[in-house]
Length: 370
Image (cartoon, rainbow, N blue to C red; front, side, top):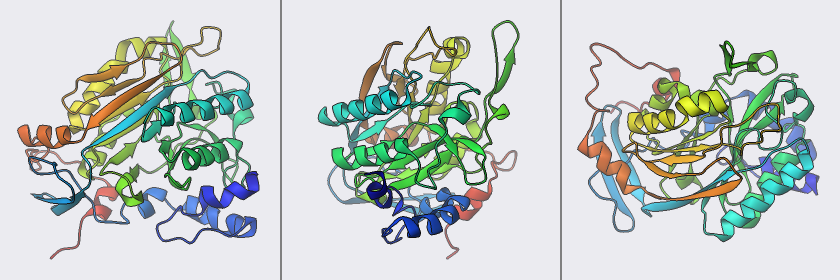
């Protein structure tokens, strides 16, 4: 069954790539794809888009906006989306974790979720000593987790951001990786955690992800409208990535209206900063933020904060869970992104004569000069 699913899982990584016919094609093609940036190939397969105008009501209404990156347009097809964030119970039994995730994806889909988000380390305990043991080789087709996620997205006809799990690359390096899937079960985006969680708070917590993991090197965007979905352009990060506003500003500059962060804060950093960061990044970018945690297990080596949360472009909390296993549903009104960015257009009021955000990804995204 796994071999049959792999073409569906990895056959459309790049836009216009034919579905792979079998394992021989898979192993020949995928390493090249992953060594190149999925972000570079997928994010700009269509022109950069941004919400604009005072209203998004009505079908097929085209909005135009003259901004610092040229004239940006968006074909509007729907004005809201229902998302579900799964606060999963994760233990030492990997097959049980995978089965539980699969069941909860199906439950969320039955309840009307169009986009489903899973937490960080959705198939394994969180800890440096666990990463090598639970790591899976997606490129070589040896990932029961990725196969389940692909099949779940396809069977339930949902867009799926698969949280994260430890991945072993062909060169032997380990990454904290987040795979995203369209409604056909095709893997369409890969984010490798860019900022590794290396901290030392004396007397409270010391953790060093870099003892086991290598960092990713690209931002990642998943645009649902490129896969038959609504006009939702998602910037993806993992946990510690949310502490770096520059990454979120890149996503804002590239037209994202939703930021998604699978995360597993602990009882120290969660209590202090979880809500603060979710609301701050939403306010910074005038976008929705989904911050999805595993549930808390006080018998585990690492105790997750829980409190999965969604915040709106005004920085207000749309919904929040407690620490127990649960599903957070939220209806995102996409017109709020437009409204807030028009009410307070501080993205256009930046003093570039005093300060600037620079990134090779922003340079690549600029449209051709007329």
